[in-house]
Image (cartoon, rainbow, N blue to C red; front, side, top):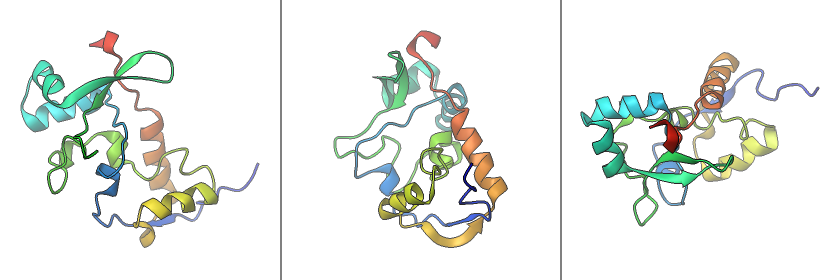
Length: 148
């Protein structure tokens, strides 16, 4: 097995450009934990929050899962000159860019750096912290419509 390219950590420092929150279409899947954190952040009932901020989208296994809405310009529904739910933001957001497929190898990491100006900049994030984020991301399962 090849040696892990990030065994000595990786440089990353968010540049607050918000490119990952807007500019391109995407899906922010919500887990049970994510939904609970957002309900507390916005002080809304589950029904109110889902109606106002969410949509259901097809998932890889054919089920429909809970996802944040996007505005017409592809901005996240929670983005207003920054994340309005930053302290309660979804795990998918808080673990970026330490997602499994981005960490597959040095090439995928550097390819993501083309889109994200914080990659390969700033302080070193330790191997241990990268692994924690990666595991959180991998174990954060979106809520299926049938689970609500």
